[in-house]
Amino acid sequence: MTSDFADALASGPLVLDGGLSNQLEAAGHDLGDALWSARLLADDPEAITRAHLAYFEAGADVVITSSYQATFEGFARRGIGRKRAAGLLALSVESAREAARRARAGRPERRLWVAASAGPYGAMPADGSEYRGRYGLGVGALERFHRPRLEVLAAARPDVLALETVPDTDEAAALLRAVRGLGVPAWLSYTVDGDRTRAGQPLEEAFALAAEADEVVAVGVNCCAPGDVSGAVRTAARVTGKPVVAYPNSGERWDARARAWRGRSLFAPRLVREWRAAGARLVGGCCRVGPDAIRSIASPSASSSP
Image (cartoon, one colour):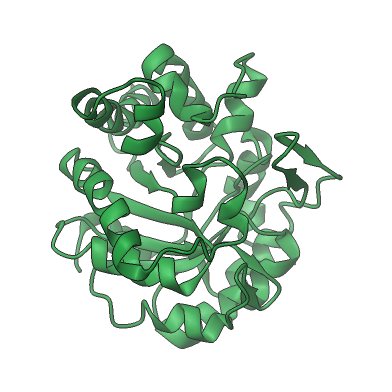
């Protein structure tokens, strides 16, 4: 699929944002709710816009919307009906667009992009199952779960759909079916453990699913350990021939029961040179990676040889 975003990705490396939740928490917001950052779409959308703007100001070319954990089912548990939920999903795109407008003030030539996040099924129950996959649902059921939300997000006209943190090939197959005909390009990124998906499938098999999907303009990995990125990037580039996206988390471990991160950060902006050398065209960070790290990624030295 041709698009302005696909053309930009093909013409030069782009910088992605970092973790939205940690930026919101740094601003004093409590994200302990099962809706996570999506709760603020209803309660304080301006806070989301400011968080996106912080990443644009740090040098990001692309920001990912706050819709990762936003689903009709999740909103329904909070008493939010489908019409209102659809409006909040659309608002996630508009909040990012507003941040881009502010970031371009006085710099109209700057090209900035909005990626609408579609997290995995496992993000909806908020029990950490997105890091395991294999929910007991077939491809058809997963497609039916994802398609309505993707339709609403696509109608809001983001530049690209971010099909992210995908833990297994069944869900990837469902997502690839769900984006057909929406008219918006997508990237597909897995969360991985070493050279396999979180559910244990070889990455060659996982990436091969997207090789012939016209809607998919990039493939890669996110919310994985920084040390798992380079090998996955090389595999994705070799198997699909598509541009590769890479945005690992800090390397800390998510404790779903405590709803907290454990361990120490292993994310080092100097690794960006290695990821780009392996074939990554869109590089940023995920959970626990903030604007300072993105600023380092965006600096000219991050693209130069070691």
